[in-house]
Picture (cartoon, rainbow, N blue to C red):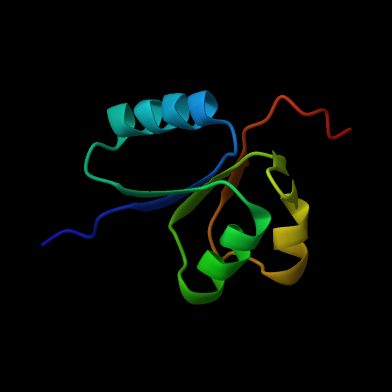
Length: 87
């Protein structure tokens, strides 16, 4: 039995989230994908689960995703996917 890749997507925009998940599915069709849209949901999720990979937007429905990473440090790589200029 093989371990399935567990991916967390943090994206508040419906169409962007759907497109990102479609792209992920093409590369990892057997992956388990959780999709969350808020900072609070991200914090709650990461308190109890650790994904293998995290795709993160910056601006979520209830705030900035960096609020999550100030309180919780995921043990997995984070790929930031955003149109928001962080520099």
